[in-house]
Image 1 (cartoon, one colour):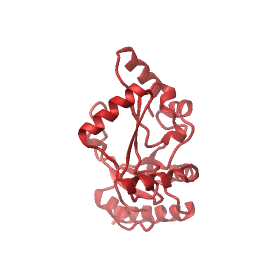
Image 2: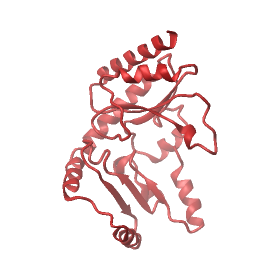
Image 3: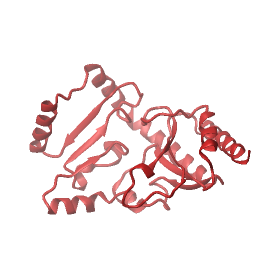
Amino acid sequence: MQDVEAIAGVAKKHGATVLVDNTWATPLYFKPFEHGCDISIHAGTKYIVGHSDAMMGIISCATRQMFETAKTACQNFGFHAAPDDCYLALRGLRTMGVRLRHHEKSGIEIAHWLKARPEVDKVLHPALPDCPGHDNWKKLFKGSSGLFSFTLRDGYSRNALAAMLDGMDIFGMGASWGGYESLLIPAHPDQYRTAVPWPKGKHLLRVHIGLEDVEDLKTDLAEGFDRLGRAHNA
């Protein structure tokens, strides 16, 4: 988790505009304009819509001048939001607070459960004290959402990982997140990491905890780990 205030402070000294992607925390759990940001960008498709049934992007600006600049750019590029998608985003806003509390509670419970699994190496959830950047999260954020990741212990093959993922019952596989459904998908930091290379062969799984019963989610993951182990030992 980055220290947004520190980054914004350096940027402002050099006259740079500070933009932040606030999709993960939403405006309920992080207030970007209170921490030096000029523009807040949201993939409204995710927690704001909340039902995985609309495409929506949202730009919020700290000042009127910044808003006019962003508005002019969007108009010049021909960006627009469909009326039906706007309706679905407004519908989602009515329940976002309730949903986020459930996402946060279930996400933290699953994160602690994963830490106790022998197949798991590290759980990367900002609300966990041993996660890099936890102090920044605790200082700047009012909560966490359902999206985090974890790495597997070394030695598991791609085929073993595929055996785990292919048999998931509740967890779906999808590039998006922030809806009511739980998702589990492999991520590949090795394809874009430059400053700090990603360890070769290290499997990273991105998980989004939805609104399903948390015990059912644990069962689904446990059965997946069993498949991972059987395929690894075959």
